[in-house]
Amino acid sequence: MRKVGVESKYLEFFKAGYTGKTEVYDVLSKSSDFVLGHIKWYAPWRQYCFMPSPNCVFNVGCMADIGKFIVELMEERKRVKGRRTDEAQASN
Image (tube, one colour):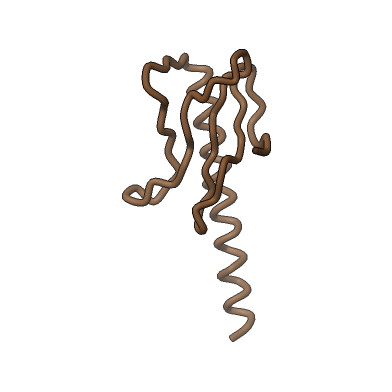
């Protein structure tokens, strides 16, 4: 696993896998290394979403950090998609 993304006082974000199209991230507690949930692509909504582990409680600061991380993922996805579109148009 590779630590990535937003700096958070209480959370760490690790790239946990790749589905072939999108990445999957674990959200861990810095104090216990407990997996608090996963961030992965949710196709029905066409966006990355946070899927919390059972019985986890989050304060507003942690939810904001998770939200910032998802915003960064979506912005990166748009940049990569834009580069692919530009490359396809250039090759035509």
